[in-house]
Length: 535
Image 1 (spheres, rainbow, N blue to C red):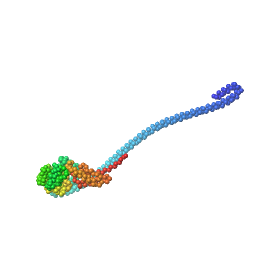
Image 2: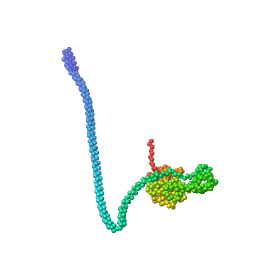
Image 3: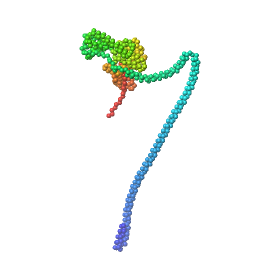
Image 4: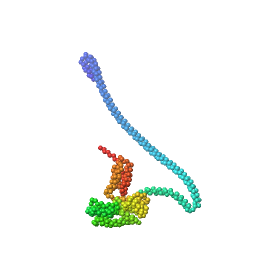
C-alpha cells in the first residue's frame, strides 16, 4: 500500500523533472521495495501475532470443550457405574438369599433326618427291649412250667398223703398253705395303708383339732381368786390388828394365812399357798369387817362358820362340775378335790373351768378319732386333779393326781392320761396325747389365761435375758405378749449355721428354765447391710 503511494509520487516528480526522473524512478523503486519489505514484515508480524492469538483462543476453547466433554464423560461413566453396581448388588443379594434359603432347607432336611434317625434308634431300642422282654418271658414261662410240673407232682403226693389223713389234718395243711400265700399280700397291704395313714395323719389331726376348738364355746376369760380385801377406812386396820396385835395373831392362827397390812389405802392382803385357806381367810375378813365386832373369840367363831360354808361350796362345785362334764361313777373324794380346784388358778385361769373345758375338747377329739368319748371326757376332767393337793405333797401335780386316782380305783387309761399329760411318763394309750392336745388348746387360746402386770413384765425380761446370754447376740425382743422372741445376732461373729444353733439353744433354755402356756417361737435374725453415700 505504501509502495503504491510512493510510486505514484515518483511518477508525478518524473513528469516534472525528466532528468531526474530516471534516478528518481530507480530510487523510488528501491525505496518502494524497502518500504514494501518493511510493510510486508510489519504486516506479517501482526498477522503472526493475530494468528498466535487466534491459535491460543482456539486452544483454550478446545481445552474448555475438552474439559467439559471429560466431565460429561466422567459423570456419564459414574452414573453408568452406579447402575451397573446396583444391578450387580441386586444380583448378589438375590444370590445370597437363594443360598440362605437353600441352607435353611438343607438344615431343615438335616433336622428331619436327625429326628427320623432318633426315632429309628428309639424304635430299635424298643424292639431290642421287646425282644429281651419276650426272651425273659419265655424263660419265665419255662421256669413256671417247670414249677407247675413240680407243684403238680407235689400236689399229687399231697393228695396221696391227704387221702390217708383225717379231716382236721387236711384242713390244717390247707390253712397253712393259704396263710403262707396271703402273708406277703397282707404285708404289702399293711405297708400301703401305713403310707397312706402317714400322709393323711397330719391333715386329719389338724382338722380334728380345729373342729374341736370351733365346736367348744367357752368364756374368753376365767375368774381368778382375789387376794385383796377392801376395807371402808384406814381406821379399820387398827381394829383388825387389835391391842398389841392380838386380833391379827388370832386371825392368822385360826385361818393359817399371813395378813399383810401396809400403807396401801383401803386394802388388806391375804397370802397363803393353800387356795382353800386363802378363800376362807378372805371371806372371814370380809364378814368381820361387815360385822364390826373383831376380837379373838368372834374371829374363831366366824372362821368355823366360814370353813363349813367353804367345804359345802367345795362339794357343791365338785358335783356341779361332774354333772356338767357328764361323768358318772366318780368317787366322793375325787368330787371334793374337783371342788377344791375352783379356788385354784393357773396364770389367772380357773383350774376347775380349765378341767371342764379339757374334758369337752377331749371328747370331741376322741369322737373324731372313733374312740370312746366318755372315757376321754373322764380323763380330761381329772387330768389336773393333782393341783388340788400339790401344796401339801412333794412332786408334780401329774404324779400326785395319778397316785390319788389309783387309790380310788380309776382305770389305767385315765391314770396314764393324768400322769403323762406333761410327758412325765410314756403314753400307753391314745387318750394321753388327746388330753395333751386338749390341755394345750385350752391353755393357749386367746384370753384363757392372764397375768399380773409385774409377772408379765418379769416373764418378758426373762425371755430377753435368756436370749441375750448367748455369745454373738446383739439384742433380743419379746413380742406378741411373750409368744415370740426376736433375736438379733452379730453377722460378723455368727454365720447361718451358728444362727440356727442359737435358735435351738435358746428354745431349749426357755423350755428348761421357764413355765409358760402354749408355745414360744424363737426367731434369730442375721442381716448384713452395706451402705455407702454418693456425694
